[in-house]
Length: 334
Image (cartoon, rainbow, N blue to C red; front, side, top):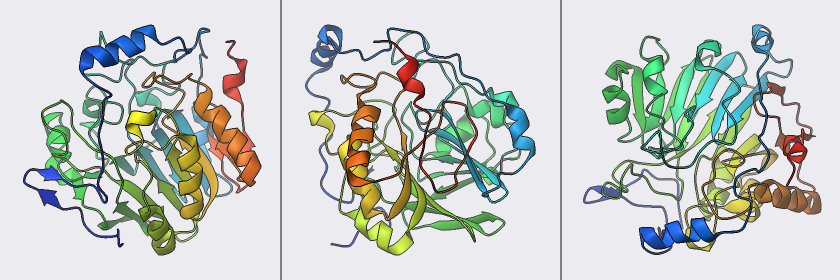
């Protein structure tokens, strides 16, 4: 089966690359009851951080040409061969439609929006609240930074103050060169979209290959496992770093979230070198203990001799091709 083709619609809804079940595990009251009665430590008992970023580091380029600051969840400041890219910027206290209810951050964002260095592009993978933050986007309205997003997401960006001419929507397999011969290619992912129960699948969700003359990296955003990772690896790999989701998984979400086991599988299929886990350690989005994703990932990586890249939140960290594990989460008592 071939997977590298533009996304298609059935009526108003985009289709996944393979049949996909989106299951919230029953009615909303049932889901709420599961969260209320769950005994796992899904939110850290001990306050994490505070974490901070030494912004003076950004005054000098990374010696290797590749440096990454993990702001938390799927928000990454990627410095790659003279360019700075920001992925799925979420700075709010909650990943929710409301500032009063919904999943709450474990720690404040370590780097303020106003302290970000000049950006060359912002990448938005899809429109879920933990990837598209309504309070953040207007803060870029007065800048000239371009946005690259999946099909349909521009409507939100424009509504929140971003000029249409600064937005490029991408279908799967679409590529754009942004500067310095850096190419961004939107690629298939197995997930869904929607900012309510009534508009699911009406905008697209994507992963991204980002390639320069000397580096090649993969931002996976949100995706369940599918065989398309093999094809992406063959066509666009190998990758110096794969950034893959490892958190917010359970048996009902097996089609739309990978968890550590399938993230390792995807990393291998993608022909990745370093694996940087994302989508964990920041919000309580599932029923598993908050440390479980990284602990399981480290166990699997050790068994398979896969080097991990695990910087401390807010720590601009140079990627040299060698494993780096800050083990920041181990300071939190259980």
